[in-house]
Length: 181
Image (cartoon, rainbow, N blue to C red):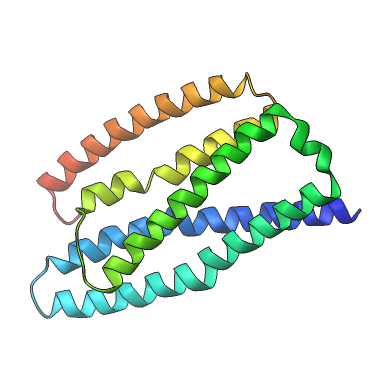
């Protein structure tokens, strides 16, 4: 029974971790756009967005990442045979990629907190999709429990990526015609 409680907590904190990773780049988009506004909007929006990003990052995202990883490791401790599964090796590769994504996002967070704007808002809109791709791959792997069938999931991810890019281009054209949207 303990195993299932730990699994439930693992899943809950994976969800909240992803929620933070989905939202923080969106805040980055707003911070970058606010940075290019005239005073006093730049200062007012910038200050508020920094507070929002800090709370999201340190109250939700980082703790969720640590707890998701801790509960995940406890599942391996209670069921080490999971490490024998080939699909789990692929999943763990995506988890490592997610950790790298998280750490890189932390770098962007620190830059923006110091008013260092090296990326465009369009770049951050695309960056925002990184966690989505990882989530799709992991969900397919966990549900299919197959190191081979996950390839179809990855193909689906690339199709999703193409659709997202097309949607991004359409949205960009709409924004250029109507800056208030």
